[in-house]
Each structure stands twice: as structure tokens, then as C-alpha cells.
Length: 161
Image 1 (spheres, rainbow, N blue to C red):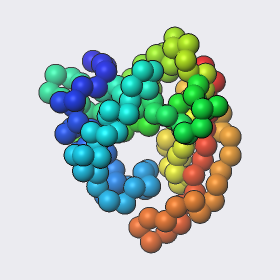
Image 2: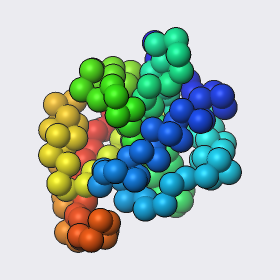
Image 3: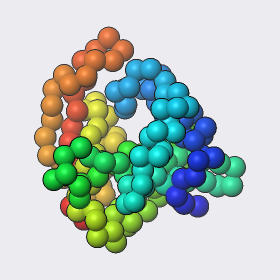
Image 4: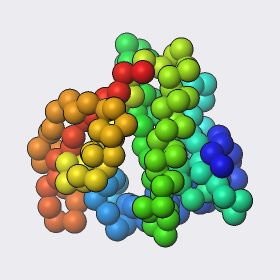
């Protein structure tokens, strides 16, 4: 079941995200997030900025967040999408369900015009995943970040809803 995240989901969300920080290049954070940082992130998702979780009854196994894209007011109708799934359930279709649900929400939300995803250039699976859902590739920035002793680029993908 997919539902809006609640404060009690934060430990599971933090564990999913911190695992990605520590073991992958899909996120450019280097240090694990603290409870305080996660709470601030959660509280920043108000109004049409949402966090959705996939929960089979035992807590969040994955989450999707529609976050503020940039601070400038002109970007108010643009949201940045993030989707993460717990390591044990990757490849089980949870990401697809979260993506479909989140896009459907964005399409019915009058405040959202564009969804942007910023993806590590080497994450070809995520890029294909977004393209399969109708996102368009809008460009690459080479060597945008440095993690695990290597420079990594980012690809920008966009879906106008």
C-alpha cells in the first residue's frame, strides 16, 4: 500500500536513505543523516510537497519524495523527485509502484507543472526507469560531485505533467 509518510516512518526512511549514502553513488550525500536532519526534511514537505511510503504492513519499504526544486519563487511549480527502496526489496517492483503513484498525484495537483529528477550519470538503470515513465533527458553535467574517490556526473530528467 502506498500512503503519505507519517512521522513514525522516519526511522525506516532514514535507514533506507543512509544505506544508499554509505553504499552507493545514487545519492551525493557522504555522511549519514541524523534524526534532526530527517525531521527537518520531513517538516519541509508541506502543502503539495509530499513524501509517500510503500508499506506492506510492517513499515516503509520504500519512499518517494516530491521536494522543492529550488528556493526561487519562479520554480514553485517544479518539484524534484527522489525514490529509494530498501536494499532487500530492490527489483521487486516497489519503485515502479511509487513512481506511478507519485506521477498520478502530480498530474492531479494543480500546483505542480514539472517533475525533475537529478540522477547520477552512471546510474543507467534509474535513467532508463525514468525514461520508461515518460521523462525526457535534459542534459548532463560531468564531474559534478566527488564520492568514493571518483568524480561523478549528473543527468537531469524532466516530466511535464
